[in-house]
Image (cartoon, rainbow, N blue to C red; front, side, top):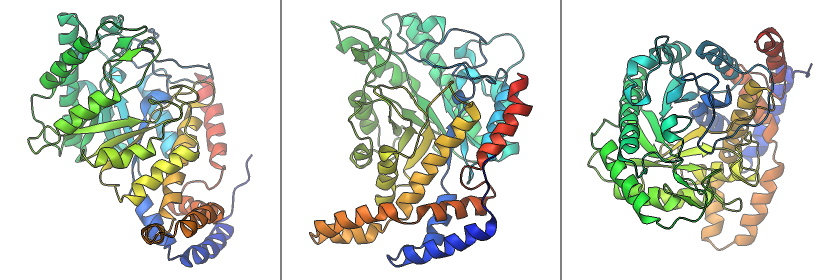
Length: 430
């Protein structure tokens, strides 16, 4: 058992930490209040290794790969929902759920993806409402016979292309209904695997086809109060190492072009695993938001490639949080997670990754941002760097423990006791 901090110690440590932060005009209470209003969208696919419930046991394709065989994988929608509920119970704050289309929960005969309707997700909508959770959505353009050749919306086969156009349109309508039911816009993200393993002779035609497909998909204007569309680029994938039609530049240009008042605004999705290992996603946030109204962030951790390791409190996630705070961009940035690890307890993976992301946001909120900007504007780069370094040893841990205490979840690593108990009583029985 991991020892649990008592409330008296947590409160005592917080009072001391709060006084230290106040010396730099940092209001810890205000930071915690702001943090409590930030929602992170957990990803359903961590709980079952991106299997979905459309075709249990089906092959995972589209350049997506999970490794590991830790016991207890969710096999049904109810099992996945139970695992998610356990994860949410250990997270401070009120968060969301990102659902992929092939997690459809419909007991009747299989439904083709281009025929999906909102009623096929009623159980998810009802469950989320009962849990007080808001939903986001993703079309599923992989692990399907019509995606076996690696091409969907940019396919040279007009029949294949039309099928996936219809799927994307169906997903927009499902997302809009989710938004209507929950009273909050449902972010509808679109990612496709289309690309070539080796050097293509024609890079132009697939992108022209993709643009045409997108124009058809977004032809109908849907209320931004119900759903917001996001487009997710990628540098490369397994089986598309040489060329991806939906590249960073392609979708960024499409989003910027469709950033008008005509009702077709698009969110640009930045996935931390979809770029060169040395690229800093944090630096892209201010660039993109200069020309696009909103972005969707998929927080992941690539290790040498888009490996989707569990998020930890590393330099990149901290830098991302700092950029959001320094740009006062919480109303323009939608945070979601995107990793899947089958080598460790899947519920624990959700908790580790989400808590790491929340910690990064708290660290950023506990910085003297106005003072840092003032020093920079005055040309005092020495003081700016010295202060940034000194912030790394501030008593952040005491503030984090107090936040967990306020939110009614275990402080420190004591949450792992709950996961271990759940593993013995629930996961081990599967």
